[in-house]
Image (cartoon, rainbow, N blue to C red):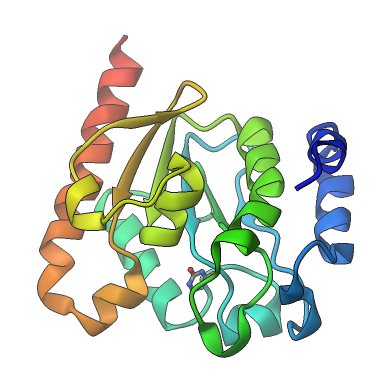
Length: 197
Ligand code: URA
């Protein structure tokens, strides 16, 4: 990515930022998607969840996590006393739906990172939660297996980051749901510590 582009994005406020995402042609994902899906939620949230990329339902409605994986995410939020209307911001590592919901490629993650980075700067969350491997890759700037990253506290520019399974993975592998719940409890403990200090 050109640093000129990254610097320009880094200066945008919310409306201009979302406008820019909708007009973006920085990678090939813009060719087949219906619309970009910027993000949703409380722009002053303490909790920020980052998914992989829009699926078909999200591509249609312009909002992240509104399909089957989104319903599970809502249950996951509920399990730690959160809901998406308050104190939660939800975004994706890539804002445009990859064809046939394939995993976003490294170059696509890189091209979209300035948008995610700017969203993080504007929200200023107390905790970032990467849902699945591409989100972890985007937030941590390296490839890491979820099994190796769970239960650890990382940082991105001073913001704590934790990693858990993607809800779509959990729909296919419900036996791992208990681990995801553990991860969310870990997040809640980190937040409680952050609040106490
Ligand atoms: N999966 C994601 O990673 N993000 C969405 O918005 C929906 C499904």
